[in-house]
Length: 238
Length: 383
Ligand SMILES: Nc1ncnc2c1ncn2[C@@H]1O[C@H](COP(=O)(O)OP(=O)(O)O)[C@@H](O)[C@H]1O
Ligand SMILES: [Mg+2]
Image (cartoon, rainbow over all chains, first blue to last red; front, side, top):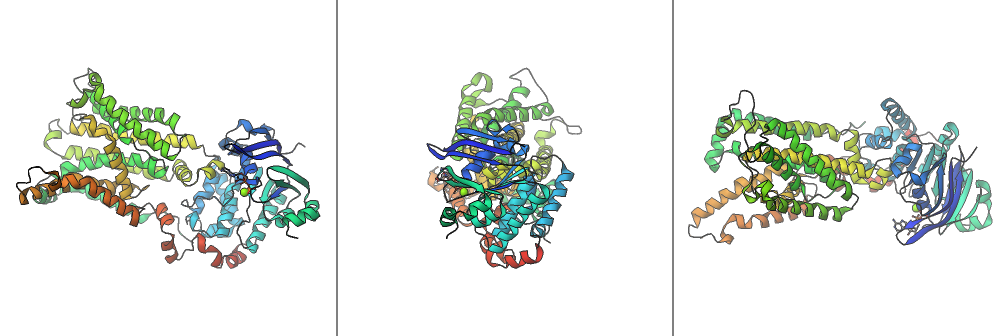
């Protein structure tokens, strides 16, 4: 089976500067792939180039057989690719419920949307308790759950997660990663997970990529990456 | 379980204001009390308030809901007024009735809004403000200079009153009530429409876009299309207000009625009342139009009484200080109550999170120390 996502020779950036020089990666159907790297390596830019918010300058991005470079960002969601952006970009003035509804913006099946909202409440009960509150009033961990739930509301085949553990207490990180693994195992959802918390990410992922200043410098099965002495020294603090 | 954020309180006030306005003409005692105090008919003034409230509603869709700074709303107001002027007055041979011209004015303004918006809405923040400002000024000068079409500074007149069953044509001039109820009726209808729109998919999308365009884009929202929709609706409502305005004055008036001052005045009404809030727009308009059309002339005539020999020196007339007071009020507002007098509940949350704390809600900054972990452990044991 061809990979669900294939990025080849991607170059992208902002203004005169290229943030990505040459990024290639694949995500297979039903796979969790993580991309680790230092701050500023280009992880966010990679995800943004896939979701179409940043336009690639060279290279190929193929998702489910579609050349994503020919789609505007708002069309890409409809193809089954959802993103939970870095920094929990929930809508602070919309309620928790409205945030979830925004996640399903491209869908036209109200009963399905309502059922999925219930599903999210089952997965994150705290969101149910707070559903009438403005998103901005949630705590950091709750906002991250909302951001993930909101992305899931699009019923994506591939979920892009940008640093879901950023700034969260360890217990919450564990819970969130548990949900990610669960979605992958029980629903076969593919995940591209960007993390600075490399250890956590490599434990949940099948394969890992290491990104350094806009280039992929290393990639292998997650446990191989996790046990590589250089990676351990550079990213796992050993 | 927290209830969903309906705003019974704010809706209640808006409803109460509309109800009071609907009842006002039924109790002439108020009209005569007001007249004794101010030498003015409140019933004559209020239709103007209703018309500007419509204009403020339109601007609020663009500036309040969607967060685009629009400084040229008066141009679309003018389109409505001139459609009324051209299609009803004897200067042209159309002579169409009000009820045809009203939707036509809305349509014309909407189309113009689309034409201006389509190429410019990609611009960000300040640039959009400049383009709309420039467009407003160009429109004013065009109206003034294309005398053959617009009658220049003389204006197109007389615009005939609407025809309504049971209301004889002469009543529109002799009695304030027909126009009062016409404009109030339109205002209430538009308020109901906006009430539903705010809760619709489109209304939420506008707010999401204002909050975070990037995240909204990631959700599959098309920012350009949404902005264009807001811009067109804002323009259409301004056109509606324009038709009513010219019909009320029976003339398109001087093109200066549609200049930058008008646009900025409307922005001030929104800021004063509370951006994004319908009730705020209404209250802002009542306060500023009241200040301009009622309070200022009263104070001026008092000054005339006290200083009979002021001889028109501007520093001794309140009108001369009007804009300074305006500016000061806005600065104070921005400093002490940036969400406006009657804020939309959404804005209040953001600008005063500490009030939320006292209501027992933990804001973002405190979430991590308020037992979140335990809460999750108890309620969210899914992993
Ligand atoms: N909006 C932006 N404008 C200009 N430069 C940016 C922008 N976003 C990121 N960059 C630059 O691009 C590079 C990659 O950033 P990013 O993709 O955010 O890295 P990461 O997510 O790995 O921390 C950095 O050098 C960063 O400074
Ligand atoms: Mg990043």
